[in-house]
Image (tube, rainbow, N blue to C red):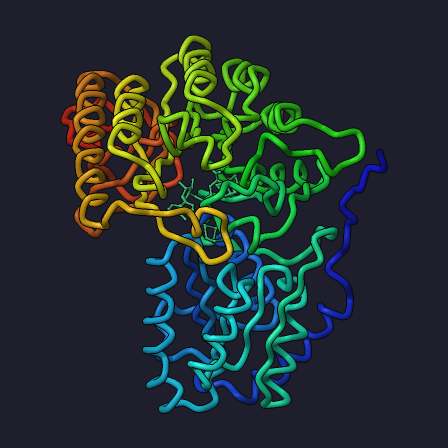
Length: 471
Ligand code: SAH
Ligand code: SF4
Ligand code: F3S
């Protein structure tokens, strides 16, 4: 077998040069004292990480950022295609930009991200919104400076979709929001083709970043004081398959964990079919990896799991969960679940409910199935009406709420380590997070933001806890 490795490709001088040229153009064109960009990112952390890179490039080109689009010289929507609801919101929000463009014709409006990798959507956007000047897909991120320069200088609309999956682009400038949480992508794309999911079509084939580069990016974050670092991939367990020597994910995270410092290390997402005991052992014996496993099960019914092309069954899933429960002290488990997959019956759904009751998750990301054009599930017969699926969904939420609330109550009176993340509003309440990913609200001074503290749990709700910071 000939192994095909990802090619490393550096953010080259040409793109850096475009950033300088953009600076010269935008300096003359800006409305205020400084060129301003408004970037809105939808979807998962992978998109957030891409947004951080776009901000990094714009920052090098002299832009500042605003969280309102009204005064921006450049407006960009970084889109998500995972469910219809996400797409509808974006159509609505791009529609609303028409007034801004009418008032300020020099404002450049752009769209990028996963929706733009679907030809029919990108074309519909391009046609429906003539005031959108630049459209590019996830594969064209590294060419952003050149594309932006072209649209600013030619006045012509630019539309680029590329799909070269063999390259991994390194060296793109990054600008993260805040100094506490940092995302580090370790791989791109997905090869799993779960039958409901659009991600493999919009993000392309799986490719891993070089291990040394990932480790040095994590080290840089740790050394500059980041406290909560998340390694990102659609299926982190298959990290390394496109790299020489095939380093495993357990190896990678183990090496990062050995970096000294005061930080938590997280990762997402782990696919149950590839989640190894080695990884769970690594978490258990680590110094920094949070005692939290996000392991999406999607359905509790073996019949539905097969239709979903998930490559595990209920028994295999529960075996990993039980191994994690027995190996990682006080492990916090979270998951994703889909209700109303085409052909799912109420009997299948009851299997999902029983799995939730058996595992007792800390929290769940719950979704009603949304058909995605071009995926196999979209052509499976789907006789259950939406109103019925909503009823099942409600039932599932009730079950999970009871479990979460019981779990929270168990923590009353205990003392837990938290990371103070932000001040909530301006009333002296701090939002903190446990290693297991539960929010704890506690009164305190905002100077504590960014530090680890011990909190005594004094009150519990359905999802969040309240507590008192102990010195
Ligand atoms: N790679 C990750 C998840 C990516 S998408 C994983 O495999 O776990 C995040 C979640 O969105 C999925 O876990 C799934 O629960 C949900 N999802 C994806 N496609 C969906 C669809 N068509 N309808 C409803 N939910 C969907
Ligand atoms: Fe989608 Fe499945 Fe890939 Fe996750 S593993 S991104 S659900 S295809
Ligand atoms: Fe959405 Fe793309 Fe992530 S479709 S969920 S932003 S990979």
